[in-house]
Amino acid sequence: MAGERSGTERERSTSEDGRPNAGRERAAPADDRLFRLTTAGFGAAAVLHAAWAWGVAPAIRFAAVAVVAAFVAEVAVIRLGLLEHHTEPKLLDVPVVALLGWVGAIYLSYSLVEFVVAGAVRPVAAGLLATALDLLTDPNGVENGFWTYPESRLSTPRYRDVPWWNFVGWFVLTTLVAAVGAP
Image 1: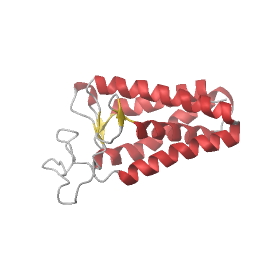
Image 2 (image 1 turned 90 degrees about the vertical axis):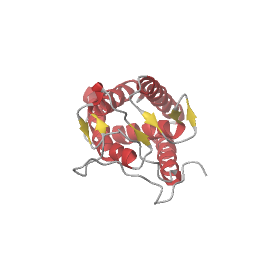
Image 3 (image 1 turned 30 degrees about the vertical axis):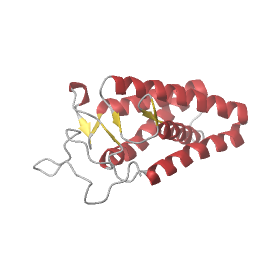
């Protein structure tokens, strides 16, 4: 099946000091079925919860804004040669499941900050929370071979093989989606 690799086929790309090689060599992807299933479930659960909390029309609007914004951002960095995804199925090189992951992460972040922050600051707080979540999850996606960030002058410095601009992108995109898409 596509995406399946045995433990012996999976390669780890490390430097002499034992640190990952920041995308210089792509690790063979791990079996991504669990990743795809949980990410799709996370996105679907977010939309269902939004429909319950906000109503169907606002939930669909929020999900649509998140998907369109994430898709445009993903296509842009892929076309610039800054990101490569290794999970199928894809639309213009963007995995469909990645879009569901964006919806889930943005909705979760926005929903949690609703309990703590009010008014115009709420989208910014959601952006900060989503970026913190990405600091935890994105390096694992790289480590498992689901995506890589090829070498580029724009991609240094990195945190656990993830370039700085990825975290800035998460903050900006989440803040914008929360400001425009949330009711």
